[in-house]
Image (cartoon, rainbow, N blue to C red):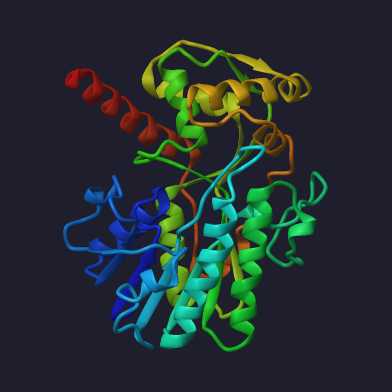
Length: 337
């Protein structure tokens, strides 16, 4: 282990899981949080919270104070978006923020830097062909602004590694699991499903991975990941219908939404996205998310398994734990009213 861990995006879904795991291991952790971050109070009390913003270079001085060769930087900060027209903040955080973190890592000569990219940054292969990290990364080879921003940022990290920085990259697939207080795409869908308010789902599927497995894989990469190398941290492929069935079984709910074929979902998605934006709701059914569910979701985590014994838990366990967490949260909310 390193003497100190600096974690950006520490109050996010993955960042918090990483910080909690480090705290359990007795590590010294400094967590970067935005001013007035509403989730900062959820961080373990042993963790030192530092106020700062990856979009402002002068706001990172306190975070990197005393950073040196015994320091490991884990860059989780990023915006995940399935919107058709994401705000400019997407590139400001995902690309500009990564560039600023890299400059600080180089200036302070940190011992290790691990960047959390995404499988969306990896060009898709034809169906039936496993997708691996051994490929060319470029924004022009992937679809959607989110994927392009992550591909661009990943190349910045790999370029820095080529110039001598001990930096590695992890590529998680769709992250799910308990504790998603911000409400990611599948969490929002599962909440609507449990409340009986999900009118329809899509017949497609993707690879989804437990947030706790990604956190453990990321920390293993900190210790054993090779400089300039990327590692896919995937889980298991499943259709959305099957996942909702498992959530329903865990919650003992019989509600079954209509499953639309992809062709129909593509027609309905633009209208549903506009309605969600007008209502201020979390986006999970958009043209981009539908296209993802129809893409090749066969991601190989063999490189991570070989390098640092990465092994994701069964999908059923993840969804059982996630459903239990959602139901307990639902109960607390109802009790509070």
